[in-house]
Length: 295
Image (cartoon, rainbow, N blue to C red; front, side):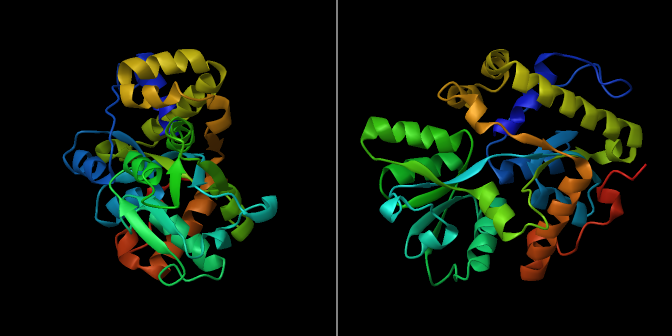
């Protein structure tokens, strides 16, 4: 959710996108099912979503083109510290109950299962995976002791740790998912979310490029104007603002990813998903129309 702030700024600034729109309006979503309903219902032109969600829509015949890529922070938040102060690894999840937002085919589940398998463990036999309806549901279950660990993006990860202090249920960020991924797969070291342009707009190369540039500019502005960015979120995306106000955004900022680097990493993950379960990305790999053409 932290990587939504550039879109919040684009909407709050009411700056026009030349040749596209006089202003942007942001509509928050809380679950992949809601997002897919908004997209198929033609309620949005530009979305921020997991690369697998956008690849699935593309495979099913929807016009989708990726305008920009970002790498949001993600953590395994745990209720127990590793023995002797050791740095925890994915292998430390053996015999534990891991809470994963959304369903088994959604990005959190796919990423964790891929990392678990790469570590030599069997996700079906060596741990208990429990899926939740949302990140905040995972936080609540973790605080109630219904799981030992949870995969959470920011700001949910920090919020879980802060709430644990209030409830005397010690939680801490134990495994940096991005770091674990880069270690396991150095040839494709970035986990990315994407800005997807939809419908007729996806066929307009100038528009797609303009949206990508606007997102990049907004991304830089947010990093330099964090307090104002939170105020904008309070007006446009109150649920996000309530979480952002609880922690230092510097510790949880997303990073913008250079397009070709992000594309390579995205294709690596999509290929692994396809080889494991083709239906997880709609039954086929995305073709060149999914990406901005090389200049």
